[in-house]
Image (cartoon, rainbow, N blue to C red; front, side, top):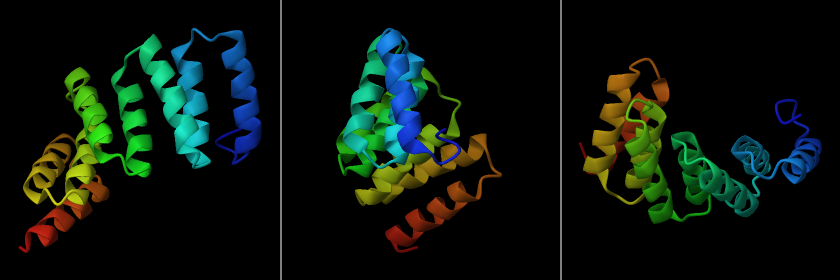
Length: 141
């Protein structure tokens, strides 16, 4: 339902799944993704936190980091991206997302380093190159 743009239906169905299997991290993560798409970041945070408590996978930390990022809690987002990277050093989006935090904090050199790392893993993603350019621009280069 989420992919079809029917977020309210998705949320209601996923809530039922969580009620039935509150011990499933994937159910909490998917519910969090639907809340995230609806831009209800506080509810998304709650569900991503539950998924982390059940199964601390790198992508759960990344998802919670995205929610923190969208409500302006950049330090919390950075901590979650750090943890995602610690658990999986091969996902370029974790570096990209952390680079976005650094960029927004004016830490252009750190942002540039993270974008370079993302590019070293996946050189074909234009978002990585674009953000690297923004880091250069922020540094005044």
